[in-house]
Length: 141
Image (cartoon, rainbow, N blue to C red; front, side, top):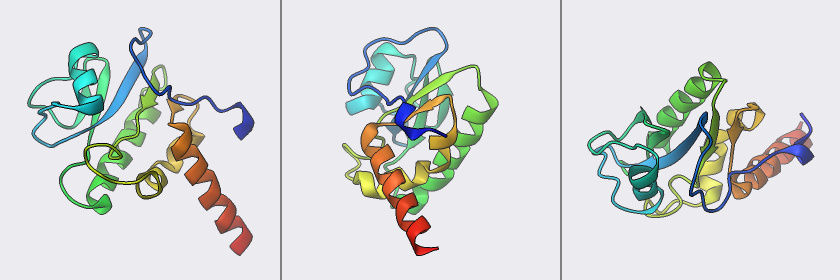
């Protein structure tokens, strides 16, 4: 894969094309009260009371229930979903890096497999972390 040709999730998404999906960090209760979750609720069909998975033109990944290890299964589930729904383009926001309080360095590695999917766009900050981690692993081998 030529990483110089990667496309990133825009900083501020206000509209989507028909087959695009807005991926946001949520809480398990599906309250969607702030940050990207509020945008998903107001613009992209997120459902109150639904804190996980596809809904409208969005996809919720719970980030408020504990540490990074509690987020990983939901990210893995999302990656599997993105592989299955390859006709869609998924725009992953900086999930967990706002209200949930995690850093890019903590969350980005969870999306390592997603960087290789042609239909998933990640924030540029996540891509930088993933590529730096891959370079460190390669240098250590």
